[in-house]
Amino acid sequence: MPSTPGEPSFQGATTTMRQAIIRAPDRFEVVSVPMPKAQGPGEVVVRTAACGICSGDLMPWYLARKVGTVLGHEMVGWAVEVGAAVQGVNAGDLLFFHHHAPCLDCEHCRRNAHVHCEAWRRSKIDPGGMAEWIRVPADIVCRDAFPVNDLAPEQALFIEPLGCSVKALGRIPSGVQGSFGVVVGCGIMGMLNLMTARALGAAKLVAVEPDDHRRALAPRFGARAALTPQEAGEQLKHQADWVVIGPGHPAVITQSLNYVRPGGTAVLFTPTATSVRTELDLGELYFREVSLVPSYSCGPLDTRAAYNLLRCGAVDPQPLITHRFPLEQVQRAFETARAGGAALKVVVVLSEARP
Ligand SMILES: [Zn+2]
Ligand SMILES: [Zn+2]
Image (cartoon, protein in one colour):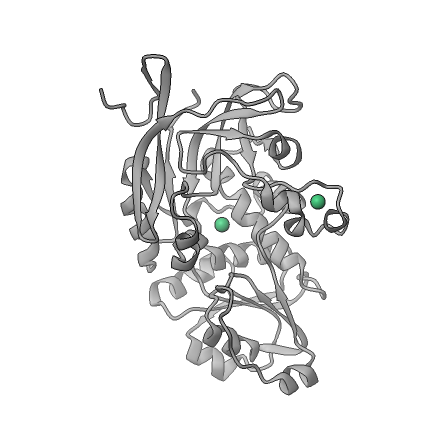
């Protein structure tokens, strides 16, 4: 008997669940697999509530590396099975858990550069975000998971992407408070970067975005003005204290460097595929003293800061959710997110209610 979507089914001795496998960079398949089981007393097994599609999940080169694995890393769910050694998590808690967790002990961790920790890179959830049940291993339970019972699941799934915004803006040496910032690209992450910068006290924010619909929305999320790239080229030359550059395309990055004032900072927010090269006018960057600061993912300090921004209402990202799909329609969810335009945050809903 086929399993009913959304409910674990009991087939003899095994219990199965549904999960979304990446078959090709643009093709996903929902399959039945055995439910994950806790493998030690420090683990938690979660009933997934929802999982957002990240802009990173739309990059073909990234997906090509992930073929055969389960899509998704912006998930939240209810703790169902909580190991005897787990502290601070109770069965029934709405649980945030990050997709990676650092050791908190190595040289990188001591500098709060958690994404460079070997343990961070090795750690992973089982099997991935778009699965009805997820096993959270002990290292993640201990070091980057916490109950978020005062949030709705659709707020909590923003902790991870918001953590990336918090980290990126935190890497601007002159700070965000009172600053003039430019956010390039008004997809979901650009909008979150605007909201976060506003919450952190930016004095003036300008968005740059070619899509008319997205440009029209940007003021709602904190931009004082929203410009086309051409307008930005004419109006923003050497103006901004900092620029957060969303798209990882070399042409967008090189154009955006031009908006940075002397001594200012350009944050490279999105990964560009390794080996992509571009030309930079090094002398021009040198004499203007423009800092290029990449910001990759986020760590436990950032996820906690993101949680605090959400729970106190300083950032309210729920209006960014434009589409919801059940797991069985993950292909449509992906295509909707990839089409861009009016689609901002696309969420796959795996369970409507606490089990
Ligand atoms: Zn992501
Ligand atoms: Zn470490």
